[in-house]
Length: 172
Image 1 (tube, rainbow, N blue to C red):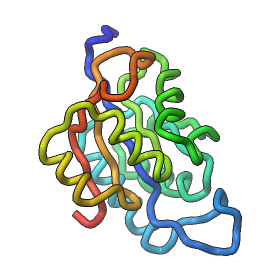
Image 2 (cartoon, rainbow, N blue to C red; image 1 turned 135 degrees about the vertical axis):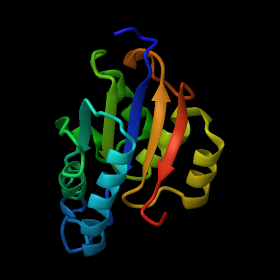
Image 3 (cartoon, rainbow, N blue to C red; image 1 turned 45 degrees about the horizontal axis):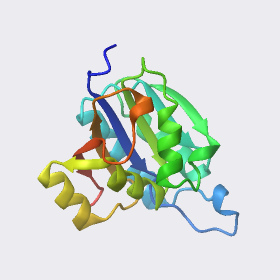
């Protein structure tokens, strides 16, 4: 694969979580989250992006979100449950993405705010106007996702090197 071939990074925030008396890492999805996650999956399928790899936080709510969303995709990508996604900063998420093998073209990262929103903002050196306005207007609510394009090797991913192509949220 040439490093000039476009890659896609999709950043998916977990769906709405419940707040039972459990440690944060163990919080499950709320009823609304269980409804929104498959809808997000259908919208991900509509992008036409064939995901090669899914990097998912080990938190219960992200695992449940991915389990419900991936069922809507035409094919199931290799999924890696990664402890480093939980409570990660944008810089830590970039370091994780930098480790992606170069034969992987399209990655979906399922994680948490503020890291997911921060990563979208930090990576997007440029943006399609509508996508930027949409993300700025909506924030990055539960079950929302951003699609970014990147035209280099994964180890070259750094702030400002991607383009924000699309943004979707459940309230759309």
